[in-house]
Length: 377
Image (tube, rainbow, N blue to C red):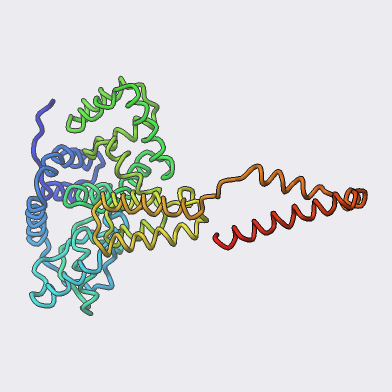
């Protein structure tokens, strides 16, 4: 493998700010990408230190500005779309007691100011009724979503739904593929490579240079769309097999489970609860959703482990199947009933009185037996 030189966010954004050519910006992207694996192996303190250096650099260039909250917009290309209420309350308490200790980082885009770092502080300031906030501003980098994605993916854990949506959007944007097609293409190529026992050759090049990654992909007999998807995931230092198995399944979850994830439910718990589908329960979609929501609430309230959640789901499915399990069919009784229905009035008219009396007694006897049995049902 080629040696990889370390980079940092301050140099990266400084270069992006000064660069006017795509080739120069791409060099900055490559320098950041080369160090992603190192950033991933470290905790968020390392990246926080880099962000602090970036703030100092921007502050020395243009100073800390007081910006009206109404002029600031959340970055729609920010992968993190979920901000838990408790997290906002915690930050609000900190701002109220200690004030704003660090300026947020904004990106200048045309006539707008977008948040690059500090959306939680911005949201908390609004809750507190503040009208302004302290900020430093950088001119808009090229490939804004990519830069936000790289920073968020390796700065702290996104919930799996936010992560899935951010990655699939990046793949769609860069490749031109439809959002719906991206997970399918990845799943297809992963299944094929697994069957060919060649998936390890993809995993082995996650930390390789771009040139080595390209060379490895060339010998795997991939379609252009498959190659493009794998190339971008590897460029983001992501394991394609893991994304296929653990991240993209979040996109197929029903809306009620997506809402639960955004409220704090773990992705693995959501996947377990997904088994409470209309098909598995033998119910309508609405009834299955109600049972799934009730079970999800129980999982959250009781803080069940993944194992306990899977056990609970299995119990719910089993109880539902038992409740609607059809009774054993008595073929002999059904055949007798059919024959009895075929006894016409004409055939009774043509019968001898002794035959009718015998038939009547038999019916009365069986009717009495049926009535007795029904008393104990």
